[in-house]
Image (cartoon, rainbow, N blue to C red; front, top):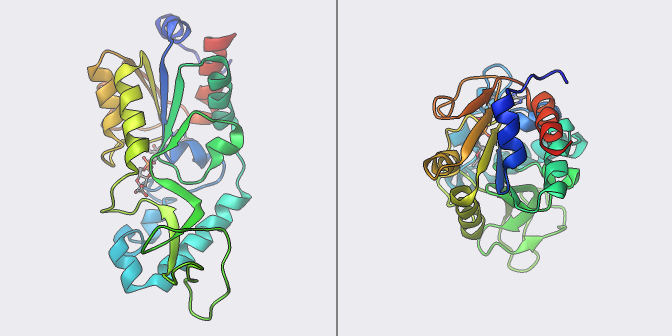
Length: 246
Ligand code: OAD
C-alpha cells in the first residue's frame, strides 16, 4: 500500500465502532470538480461568492446565479465518484455505526453507494422554488431564466445552502449527535473554515474521539487532530479502508 499508516492509527481504526466521516470539496477534486478555496483552481478564485451564492445575489441577479449553477451542474453530471468516495461506501457497508456528513452538494457520495449520509449544504441536482421550497423535477422553458415553479410561480433555485442561510436542521442535528458520540472522526478534504459544519471535528475531539485529518494542506484542524495524513483522499482513504477492514 502506498500510504504508510502508523501502527497506533491502525489499532484505532480496527477498534473503532462508531465512526463519522466528514467531507469537503477536496474529496471530489480527484473527480475533476473544483474546490472552493484552493488558489488557482478554486471556483471562488474566479467568481466572488457574495456575487453568486447568497439569497441577495439571487434576488438581485437571478439569471446570472441560475446560469452559474447550471454550468456547475454540467460538471457534476460528467463527474464520477473516485476511489475516495468508494472507500467510504466500503467502510459503511462493513461497519453499522457509520455516518457520513458531507458539505458537498455534488451527490457523488450517494452515487458511490453511501446511504448513511447527511448532506449538510444540500444538493445541486435538486431544485426548489424560492418562496415555498416546492421541489421541482422539471420546468417549462422560459425566455428569461430562472424558470418558474409549476405550483406557485416563484422562481426556481438550487436546493443548496447559500451564505447567510441556515443549514437543514435535522441534517445538522444528526451530524452533531453522531460527532459527540463517535470514537473515530475522519475529516477529509475540507478547509474546516465554514461554520457551523466546521465545528463537527472539534466537537468530536472535545468528546474524546480520535480525530484523523486527510488533507494535503494545513487547516485549522491540523493542530488538534490526533493523526494527520498529508495525502490526497483518493490515495489515503483506500489505505484507511483496507487497514480497517482487511
Ligand atoms: P474548500 O475549497 O474550502 O477546501 C478544500 C480542501 O480540500 C482544502 O483544504 C484542500 O487542501 C483540500 N484538498 C484539495 N485536494 C484534495 C484531495 N485530492 N484530497 C484531500 N483534500 C484535498 O472546500 P470545503 O471545505 O468543502 O459551502 O468548503 C466548505 C464550504 O465552503 C462548502 O461546502 C461551500 C463553501 O462555501 C456552501 O456552499 C454553503
